[in-house]
Amino acid sequence: RDIQNEEIVAQKALVFANDKLSNARNRLQENTKIVDNVKNALSCLDYTSALDVKKLLSNLRVSESRIETLKISLAHDCSRIDELVQATQRFDNDCASVELCKIEELLAEKQKRRELFVSVVQSHRNCSDVHKRAEESVKRLLLVPCGEQFKTCVFISDCHNNKQRLSSLRLADEEAEKAVQREKSTLDEIDDRELTKKKLLLVENMTVFQTNKRELELLTQKKTILSSELESLRTSIEYTRSIVVNTDADSAMCVLKKREELLASLRTKQEIVASDE
Image (cartoon, rainbow, N blue to C red):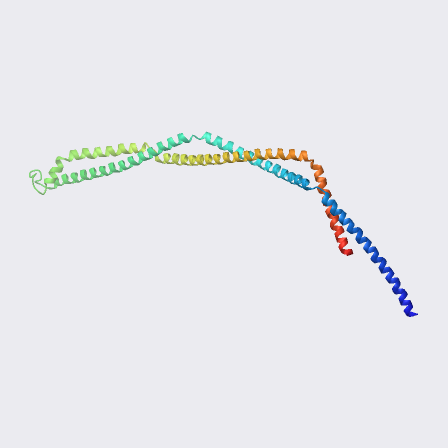
């Protein structure tokens, strides 16, 4: 009786297992069929053109963003170009070059006069020394009792000679002193300190002018390049927009959305089929 009871229980369990297996097989067939249907739907869905439209729209957004960046850069460059143009127009580089040459000539003249002044001063010192030595030599005649009687005496002959040319030596000394005063007055006519300040200021302004001129050239070249790129982007955007309008972008986006939904459904059903298997 026990064996018969166990057989009855086993038969019931076997029937239940067969029913469960049958249900699982049916569900597997249904899900497999659904997977096949989704694959067929995906294969029938023409999304190539939709992807092209999506790419065009992406490129369009990138181009529009680039145009805004170019506009900002061009506005900044144009403002700087205007400043540089005004700065270069205010400064006359040619006149500054002429003035700088004049200043350098005056400074060179000042240097020559300074050297001449040094030479004249040295000449005056020499004349003064000769005059002083001659006066001292003549004074020695007063110390010699017979100095006026023996003019050819070897010991006092130079004193007599100096006495004879003392007047001319005095005149030469006075003339040398006058020459020193004249050269000093001429030397003071040129203020080399003020000229040096003007020269440094001119050189600084000319350096700034050349720097601004170079920057202006570079910015002008950059403006030309950016303007060309801007025009090219505008042409490209107009062309892309015409394609998107003619392609019906909304329908293309619907197709891509439908494709994403089908792919998500396919992955879910494939997981279920794998689990049932």
